[in-house]
Length: 109
Image (cartoon, rainbow, N blue to C red):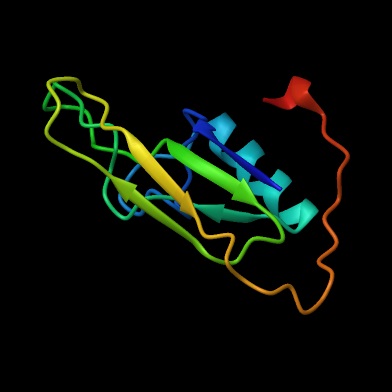
């Protein structure tokens, strides 16, 4: 399973120097309860134009059963939001079945 998107979610698990918001807490708790892995770029993808705001990581992916994913943030655009590139390598051998919970409450997002 793989789901990557702009969650607009902030949590200290992926925003070490940033703030926490309700979406971040919900995504973090949901991923932990379902056994999902949260992947994020090492550099912030959201670079605010106002100096009072802090750069943040809001583009994330949730995955389960995939263990060879790389994440890159590409800067250099004129926007305050850099694109994030998730690369999944499917050239691997699955030696065991990984069970992921599949109950989703989309109203929480």
